[in-house]
Amino acid sequence: MGSLTVLFVSAFWTTNSFTSQVVKVWSTDNFHALFTTPVFRQVILRSVGVALAVTVLCAVIAFPVAFYTARVARPKWRPLLVVAILTPLWASYLVKVYAWRLILSEGGLADWMLKPFGLSGPGFGLPATVLTLTYLWLPYMILPIHTALEQLPANLLDASADLGAKAGRTLRSVVLPMVLPSVAAGSVFTFSLSLGDYITVQIVGGKTQLVGNLVYSNIELNLPMAAALGTVPVLVIVLYLLAIRRTGALTSL
Image (cartoon, rainbow, N blue to C red; front, top):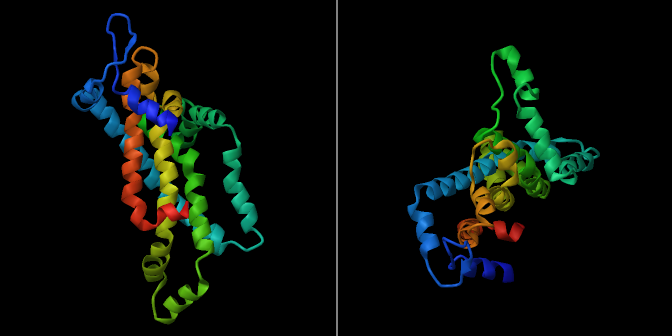
């Protein structure tokens, strides 16, 4: 909490336009600039949009993967599948991002695979950023869903089938409501990690700018503005946690 307190306090300071020295005088100019300058507003909205897109993609991909590992795969194979899901987390973050840079670069693996269909890879930019972040944080969504599905009582599924519910109805009425807190718990990681990321954007984002990049670029010349920008992800994540707390996600963390 000490570092967050310093962050918030620094956001109310200003910078001398001539010397670039921090002036410890209370002012709301930085926050006023954040919400009145079109560039800042666009970057903040783009950052939240990227975090939401990554979270949705992770949830869509993670559910079938977790369902297979927890309910379909043979019991003797399940530990190996969980290890396979965890393995990417053991690799270096930078190694994985640069691997995606090679895949998405011009003439890279993506271009090579799509060329027979007359298509090309997404290259560097916003789609590449979303794709790479989805890959990076996907295990954080799979694992809580896997745990929830593994603990799902089989008698509930049997009871639903005995009452005449088809597989789709059982999925909507029984499985999804019980797994939803775990999905929300996983989303806390995918959303917060995506919202605060800036290295991935620098490597595969091309000219894309997110909040993290603006914080990095302002940290030396305009520390108070960087601090004000840094408070944005914190406030957004707090609001996000308040929004999902009724799902029981916080007890699933």
